[in-house]
Image (cartoon, rainbow, N blue to C red; front, side, top):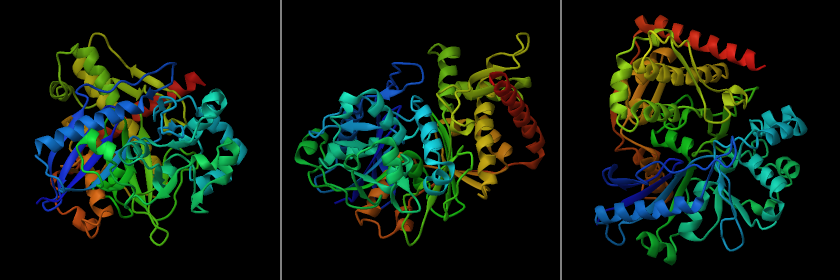
Length: 500
């Protein structure tokens, strides 16, 4: 009989499940639903919502698919891991019914609430104890509901992050994690517990916060009703949960101080691990509890996030291709344009407020356009160079904080499938890039193996992780890419001055 682990990754574009063979460390089956990207509703400008029940629907479909296709037998699945889009807010009543659509990560409505709390709580407390300003994170979103939907707020039994919700649907138990509460800005790093100051300032009832469990642990088991809906055996333990960025770092075995991971999906990120609680004085990058954190061996994740990443590439695909161009063709076209796109620059910040821009809605901008010279090749390359420039902008903030950024790991997926993107990334940031055959769902499955005791330790969990490619920069290109970045940065600063 095989020993299998199921990983579930709840994204804002799709839900993916992956079955990992614990004996080989290899994924044997994976599936994403829906086939097209999930809808993000925007009832007002700057808002972004999704129905949590849709996540559950797609979890059921994807789980049934992999179990059937892999011909999984009863007793083979030994643990379930859950990764999820960070910073979302899910509210349920005492009967575990969803009270409203989830306010997800790229929703901007709570920015003024976070700014007000930052002033009231005080900069010193927020940076020393929370390692962040309250900003637009989950706690601020919950306060928005309290202020604007008081009748609904009166029905709240528990607040959850998206992964907590899926675990609840699988097990019937409502739990959360330290890393989850830290990403929501509920966690006091000095007290190593909930921040009473945040709860008091936001008028959040402590009873709404679920019980806290470690990321690696037995945290509920599949219920009889969930078994019938998913095809999983009743009693299979849920043994890992983490937000998508800590989990992405985990999936790449980024667990030690100085190690870094990056992603470039709908949003783009760089995530570095530190053994002390670093913070940016301007809170443009954020520090959270990492998945392997403990009081004895502290581990923190420093997260740089750019909302406008793959979503810009997707927008260009729809605009330029009208449904008749794919990403491979776009990458080929972009490669045909010269480094610097003949002076064309793309500011990619068109997906809500940007944390590295101090929670300002800078917007997306195409700058330097010459109607006699530029075509879609230049636009595609300028978009990819602009996305990397935005990541570099944050990368340099992380360096100022003291992180040593030399080697970065990524899954070979999304924007990292583009040769232009990869080459721009390694040269603009002067780093070695290692590309692996993994993803968030596989990472969640490996985490489940640790939590369920299938793997003895983290090293054993990653025995099957495959390095596909290493890309090293050529210093002969440094000057060219530095010129691209400097022009991009000058234009960004000019836009900010105009807006001021």
